[in-house]
Length: 220
Image 1 (cartoon, rainbow, N blue to C red):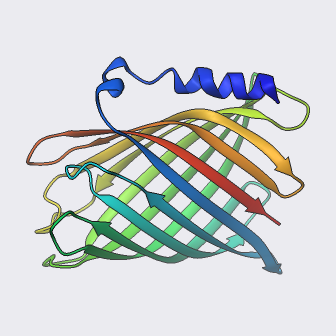
Image 2 (cartoon, rainbow, N blue to C red; image 1 turned 90 degrees about the horizontal axis):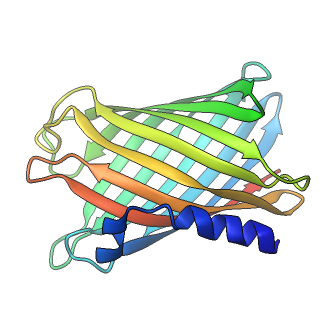
């Protein structure tokens, strides 16, 4: 376990030097999935993106989805997402989404497990003049490094708007990049921790956010 913690500390040290000059946001997350019979599953997720910087609002996201396994490597999902953005001195921003998702376990290359997650979102944003359609495509790599299932993890996820609304006038919305470690802590529980860089492309100026997601995954 000490070796695992040292590995995680090393990955966190990979943050760019500029990150030391700005706030690093904790992103505590809990994710749970459970089979409900005949190839169907249900999942829920809560993410709290905590910020003390007025320029980078805090955000609370809750997600509920139902999935159907199509094969040993492909699962499709559909569900609902509720996002609240807390802005200092302003009313909270409210966004609701309907979402469709495809998870694909692609295989392994030189011991590295490769998987993808593609999401299509219909975003209903308070104050927007229309529904914004957004595509997210995550490519994830995982390298097992211990017999207990501990893995080094890295992923990238660009976000692309498929149309423009009064709330979103940019086609390229953002990209998130993550490097960390996943550690099993119980039979159905693992914890993933690492460094995440979020680049937001905005008309008022591009924004970089450094974050440390700590995700508890419960899989039954």
